[in-house]
Length: 451
Ligand SMILES: [Zn+2]
Image: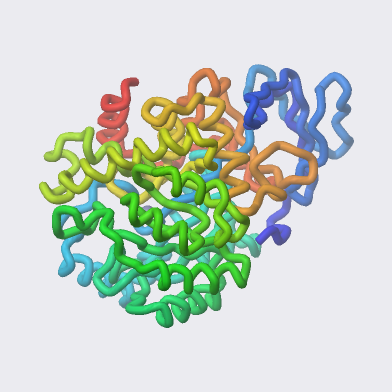
C-alpha cells in the first residue's frame, strides 16, 4: 500500500509556512519549513530560521500560507457524484435494473471511469487518503493498485469491495454480496479478502436510502453470529470491519460481533459506550464511530421537492438522524474515537464536500474546529491503521499535505479551495480548477448550514 510510486517526485521544501499540526491540542507553529524528499516522504519539519534548503530542492515560499496534513475521508462510495438519487432507483426493481447495468459489459467500464473521476475529485478537494465502504465490484481495488503502482497520481486508497448484506438487505443487490447465514458471511468475507480489499463493510441494519417500509431503516438485519463470522475472518488477515448501523440494537449487535467502525450510529447506552472504548472482539480492542452528518442532515433540512426523497424515506430519516446526532454527542462526551466520513455519492454529498463534514460536526455535533480537524487527520489515520504513514506532518511520514490561503481553525471554509495538494510527495497545483461543482447543491447547502 505504501509502495514507492514510479512517477518521479522532485524533492522540494515548503518554507515560511504557518503549520496547523492537526494534533489534539490545536498546535499552530509559525514560520516553519517542511522538507520533502524524492521518495515522497517528509525529511524534516523545523523552524525556517534554522533550516537551510538542501541544494537540488525546489523552494516554495509559503509566507502567509497555512500548511496542514491532508484530509482523510473514511466513508466514501465512488459510483455517483452526489446529485439527488432518483427515488425510483431505490425500489427493489430499480436496484435490480441498476445492478444488472453495473455488472454488464457496458456498465463495468462506466463504473470504473466513475470511480476514477470520483477519487480524483476527492484528491483535488484535499483528501489524500480515503476508504471506500461499498463498491459495485472490485473497481476500487483495481484503482488503488494503479495508484500504488504509480500509474496515476491519486489519494492513498483503502478499498472495501462490495458490502455484505442479508438477502434483500441494505445495499443488495447493487453493492452487496448476499449472506443468508454465518457460513456464507465467512465465505464472502474471504472472497473479498482474496480480491485484495483493505476493509470489509457490513449492512448490520436497514438504511434510509433503500428502505421500503417505515421502521425498516435501522431495523437489525444481520445476526451477531453472522457478523462475528465476518469479523473473525477479516481480523485473521488484519483487515478492519465497518458496519452500517442505524439503531441502538443494530449498533449493539455489531459491536458485540467485533466491528471496528460503526457507520452513522444511533442513541448509545452505557453498555455501548463501554464497548466502543473497550471492545475485546475488535481488531485493536476498541471501536470508532463515523457519523456521516453530510449524508444524513440534508435529508431532513432540505425541502422534499429538492431532495426528491419519498415520504417513507423522510419518515425513516427523521427517526434515524435524530438518534445519530444524539449518539455523536454522547460519543464526543465519552471520549470515543470519532472519525470523519462523508458517505460521498449519496444525495447531496458531492465527492468534493469533505470539508462540510467537519463544519457539520462543529455546527451540529458539539465539536470544536480543533477537534474536527484532529478527527479528519490523526484520528482517521489511527482508525484506518495508517497512523505510522500519514495523518500528521512528521519526518518519516509520507508527504500528504494541504497548502491553504488561511487557517482552517479560524474558518473551516479555508479547506474548500486548497491552493496546493501534495499526495505522497506529488504536488497537485491549482487542484480545484478541474473540479465539476454543482452550484445549485452548493447554494442549497450553504443556505441550510448558514453561510
Ligand atoms: Zn455509505
